[in-house]
Structures are given as structure tokens and as C-alpha cells.
Length: 407
Ligand code: 7TS
Image (cartoon, rainbow, N blue to C red; front, side, top):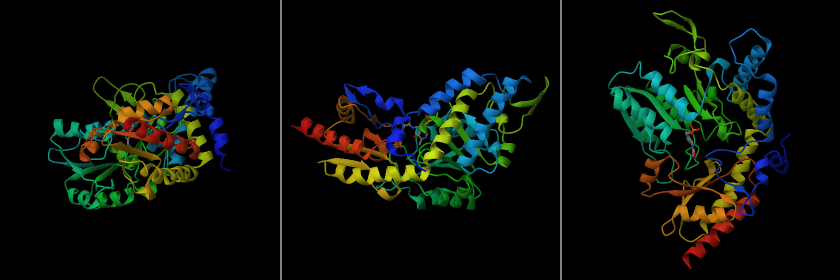
């Protein structure tokens, strides 16, 4: 049974906060989501009842902490339908997950090998590959997008050759909010023998994922964008690949045996989780996964669609507005927009006076803004606890701000 939206809202204490004497309307979910009381309590519960370092001792508390942390991996495994929980590596965030892959591959890629990404990526799916280009002689290619924000699949297909080793694309851009056809991209890449990394930072929180169906080799996302604590993220990788890869970080817990000459790596996922893990937040991330599963990703996707379908026609009535990525059919609740005559910062500042939180600027996607020839956008991003009434309030305040600034 899906919780009703008013029940959902009651689970998020921060939604009671007032900003400038007005109820908070939190529309910055793409940057980070809010946390329900179930997740906030789980963090405290861990420290009150279960805290001990994992994998270190035989005492009861250490065993309990270890089991809870492993369980959190299993919850994520089920959430994305991975084959084996050992394919779930906990990192700090999407950024670290992608860097894990690029650094690990730096040991095996050869100069002249190619990597394909797109111009619509968040910087964290560009810079790790630029590192391989600048320091390891890898050729980095960028697939274009069409004016409507959709990926130019023909261009991506042209760029992907027998020399391509990795195709790294977002499933949903944090600016456009459009859902990319990742299954088709995986098919194109695999046909040429390339691996595929999916940046799922903006898809995992909003749409149902099935990594076996997508057949992705790697998939990365962040806990803090999906009701979980900060400092915990995920890298999914196919077991046989992870087994064959070099570790990213080296130190405690990621080894089976160490001599002064060499070391034998631990089994997955610990081989890639060096040092003391973020087990308390890992446990609480499990509570976030439980919460999302109870509400249901299908419901969340439908809910955001309802808001987007309501909002876009209303926004388009505002004189001079430009919206990026207007294909509504495949859009999550992310709407970035700009005006030729009013800066995004002015919009963001004035919306804040009414308690409405939106992000302004380039959203860590400068090449995408460059493609559109703009300096920045204002971005309203919605999640499961946002209501159509909030969307209505937002568009009403935005229209009056635009009128006021122009008068
Ligand atoms: N990839 C995408 C598509 C993202 O949207 C983000 C964060 C990241 C990667 C990086 O995630 P992190 O958890 O490692 O920081 N996006 C945003 C945003 O749009 N506003 O703030 C962070």
C-alpha cells in the first residue's frame, strides 16, 4: 500500500521549517534530498545500540555491526536487482564511484584506447575520464545532444569503435531531467566490445532500476539524493569485472594477506572498501532503501510525472521563459529554465524570499550550458514529498517575480 502524500510529508521533519516566515518549499532535490525520520533515527540507533568497527573482532557488537552493514549491501542489491550482493560496493558518493572505475582502469588501459562520454554529463562523469586522457594517453570523445536535450544516439554510435573501452553516460541529466535510453546505449557499446558505466545519480532516486535488464557493467549513485545520509554512495559492477580489476584505494580491510613484498586482495566488495567503512551511514542508507521500496519507485515516477505535466504548460505561459529538455514523456521532476533578460540568480534570490528553494548556476554541468550558449539556469527539482500545490505556488510566484522585475 502506497503511503498517502500527507503521510509521506509528516515523515520529513524539515518540511515544517519556515524560511523568511514562509513554509519551506524545497525544490532543490537534485542537489540533495531531505531525509525521513526513519533514516534520521536509524543513524542515532546505530550509534546507540550497534556501534563497533566491522570485520575486526570476534566480539558480539562487531559481529552485529558487520551483519547490519552487509545487510545494507543486500538491500541495495535487491533495489537495483543485481545478481549478487558482492557486486555492491559502498563508496562516499557517485563522484567517488566513477573515480574508482577510472583509477582502477588506469592500470590496464593503453595509450590510444578510447572513452566515449557526452556533453550533457555532470562534471563528475567528465573529469575522471579527462584524467585518463591527460595522464595515460587515452582518447576522450564527447557525444552530442540534440537541441531538445535528447542524446544524439547516431553520434554516440559513430564515436563508439573497436578502440572504445568505456562508454560513460548519465541515465538522467541533472539539468535536463530526461531519461536516456541506456539499454540501447549498452547494446551499441557491447556490440563494439566496450564496457558501459551508467551515472545513475539522478535515476536511482526517481525510477525503477534493473541492472541485469540494462546489462550495465558499472552503475554509480549517491545515497544523499535518495533519502539516505551524506557520505555513502554505491558502485555496482559485474562480479567478474570487479574480480579482475585493480583496487582503487589500498590499506586496511581490503586485503586477505600482506607480506613486506606483496598483498592478496580481499573478496568483494571489501577489496574496494579500504579502511574503516562508513558503516553507520551504510546502515541508515538501508533504512532509506526500505522507505523508498515501501513507497514504491513506480509511484514516485508517476508522482513526478504528474507534477511535470501540470507545471510545464503553466511555465510556458510566462513570457520569455526557455526550458531545457521539454520532452515531457521521459522526464523526471527536474525543470531548468532561463530568461534572456533576468539572471538565474535574481530568480533564485527572489523565490527564496517566498520560502522556495531552487538552485541557480551551471549545476556542475558547464559544457551542457555552453552547448546552449547560456551562462546558467534556475532549476526546480521535485521529489516524492512535493505536491502539485507547491508546484502551483512556485509558478505563481515566478510569474509575479518576472512581472515585477520587468516593470
Ligand atoms: N552525476 C549526476 C548526474 C549528478 O546529478 C551529480 C550531483 C553527480 C553525478 C555527483 O554526485 P555526488 O553525490 O558525488 O556529488 N548533482 C548535483 C546537482 O545537480 N546539484 O548538486 C549536485
